[in-house]
Amino acid sequence: MASPFSPDSTGGMDQEMGKLHKVAGVRLPDKPPSTLWDVSISEGRISSLDAHDPDRAGPESSPGILDGANRLLAPSLCHAHIHLDKCFLLQDPKFSDLQIEKGDFQEAMEMTGKAKARFEEDDLLRRGRQLIEESIYHGVTAMRAFVEVDGGVQFKCLDAGLKLKDEFEDRCEVQICAFAQLPLFSGEDGGEEVRKLMTAAAQEEAVDALGSTPYVERDENKSKMNARWISSLALTAGKHLDLHLDYFVEEHKQPLIWDTLNIIKDRNWLERGGKQITLGHCTRLTRFRDWEWDQLRQRVGELPVSYVGLPTSDLFMMRTDENVRGTLPVVKMIKQHDLQAAIAVNNVGNAFTPQGNCDPLGIATLGVGLYQAGTKKDAELLYATVSSRAKGAIGCESTSLSLEVGEPADFVLFDRMDSGWRCRKSIAEVVYDAGPSRQTIRRGRVTAL
Ligand SMILES: [Zn+2]
Image (cartoon, rainbow, N blue to C red; front, side):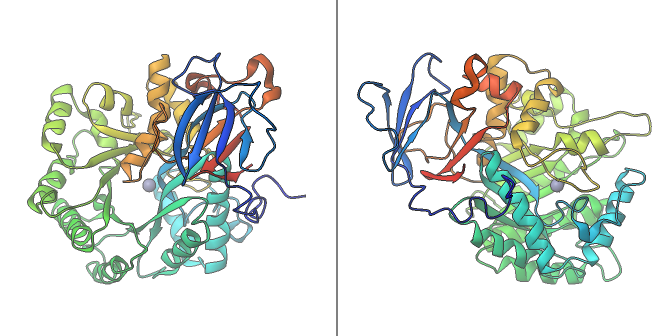
């Protein structure tokens, strides 16, 4: 029997059949829970919000009308940061000999290196397809997917990523980030091959973003060269920039964020029409005092910079010898320091993050405790960090909690009508405990039942 995640459980759905012009009788995040609404859709966008009249509703099964059945309808979810090529390595039978023995960063690098040497198109597609399919099932309509480019894998991961982007075009916006996980200026050949491959990847029109990891370089000077080189390439190629930065928590090690912002400004990013800049990991910033956060806000200025915190990975990986832990304080960054920030899953089923699944909302749920953010307003903010703020962080058009006319009809419906009083009626309830029953709609089409 097909599982709800089996790749063809919805893949074969007739796209015309899934096309909606109305979702009738739903609760909306910004409205009193006792009132029901009809959301009309035209050309994949919200065309009106009207009070639901049960007497006038007519046959709920008519084509193009989805019976909302009192469920909560909210903006869809987004992965602002997810590694497509190294997902499910702990589950895929092909890599069953590679299991965690120690659970540290070094082992994760080594295990992933061994797995990468065996990557082939068929397992890249199988695992990547599973990740996208499960994500859609959880309510995801957009993601930034990292695929590594280096001398070992060459373009295998990138090509598989581009195939999947194409395959899911109607159901999910899969942004592909060609990503240099290995050094661009250190190593045996001084990073020459990776730079050559990344330069070629940047020419691909379907590649949306370019990224690198300055912290893997041998010294500070090379880390700066890394940031300078990749930001120039992104600017010239007209791609988004995604840097995985300052992935450590030791206070004595200096963060690269200040130099990175200077490098980007020196490029005249704004004047030259540079696209979105996304900074992931950044755990060293957890050591910042308030004055450093204020300084960071000033230095960012008008630059389109967003930060993405990856708390499940950080909880598993990030600690000093004295057991100091750290993950970006995303709620505080938004509320107190007026920075753009989101949270994301990062890895699924590998040695960097063995725990967790493809549900971005699970990270928001974790955030309630992690950031001690329990009020209704905090819960709504946490929801936004895996929804509208996550989309904004990767340069995607987003749908707000107030569901304005003209915004994309990208939704997720929670719960079922038979849930009784337990039925989730508000964003706070789904952030506290999302529940498993969801239905996903992208641009007015049902993408997951
Ligand atoms: Zn990552």
